[in-house]
Amino acid sequence: MMHIALSPFAITRPASLDDFINTIDARLTAAKAGGADLLVLPEYASLALAGAFVATPDVMAELDAVVSRADALIAAFRSLARHHAIMLLPGTLPMRGTDNAIHNRAPLIDGNGAIAFQDKRVMTRFESECWGIAPGAAPCVFATDFGRLGIAICYDSEFPLLTRAQVLAGADIILIPTCTDSLHGFNRVRLSARARALENQCFTALAPTTGIAPWSATLDENHGYACTFGPIDRGFPDNGVIARGVLDTPDLLFVTLDPAALAQTRADPAVRNRADWPSDPPPATVVALA
Image (cartoon, rainbow, N blue to C red):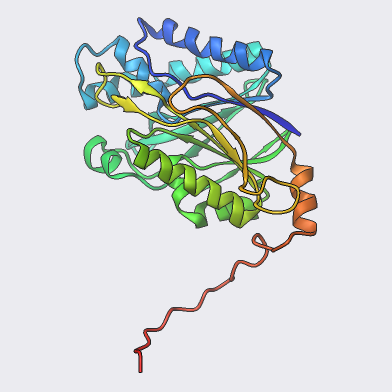
């Protein structure tokens, strides 16, 4: 059983790196007080740090401000996770890879400070066309004390085969940090998360950015709410919604997820969504009406 705190992170302008880290520390303190084993922050939460170093909105300057401080951020996140003895997914941050390209990377850090990364695989138009973010490594699964977890970063959740690979590798919970500047974008991710839970009979948990930041070119407008989904089957809510927060509010959403409940449903479901995937779907043919 895993107790998760999902943070609809409010984008505010920090005064310094220490000020930004103190904001994360406060979120961890609240998550720990609420009994969470894991705190999940949204995609690109760390881009808020650029506000401390870039005077006027500028995409490339903001990216550079965070990329150049990525190592310091990672060190601080690991220290905070150890201090609070809690697992931390601090959203994502742009990091330069060994290929010299910038990737959108999600660190997962346990309570001892051990760390591993999930890259975003599929870029949105603004990431590829305006920001120059490059596709990262293939999906992976993290072995933790609470079972196996997968991370599908925002747009990646809209592509079923990426999540399917994680579920087949044993992930019962898919964490979805997201950053969207419109309700269209948020609802694409939300509905995709719900569909991934349905078709894989797994849990999905979504944490979005929220708030308006006119001082930022990368995080200017943010909409969404935290939510968690499960199978639409026996033992779970009729609509698959396990928990949801309030639109555009920054309050933590606490939820307890039990993989044993998944196992019970998978053993005797009304339908076998997880098992009935066609292994090699045949190509469609075009048929004329006669």
